[in-house]
Figure 1 (tube, rainbow, N blue to C red):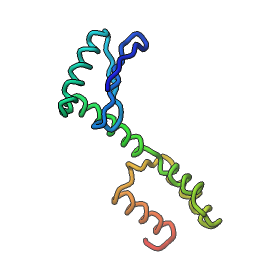
Figure 2 (cartoon, helix red, strand yellow):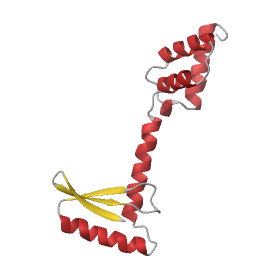
Figure 3 (tube, one colour):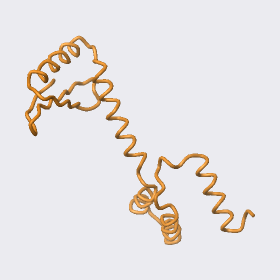
Length: 130
């Protein structure tokens, strides 16, 4: 199913179909351009063919959503844990200290090398490793 709406001086085509993870939007300068694209897409989808341009657009949307999750700060994850899990007072103090140390670190930054380096730093600070 596709629909065209006039928005902010342009024509927005909204394509919704069961084979697409989410509705996709395309913007055109003129209504005939939008209608032509709409007809082509509807014809292909009715045959069970997903046009490459729709697959590309859907992939970009998924990648953007993943990037938004990956860029989430680790401190926000810790705060979410503190807010939603039963946390003992001693754990709360530790987690608060970790939040201070991990300010600016994103989920995307955390990999094996980062974790190994962080644990090594904790051990050195504690005096376990020299």
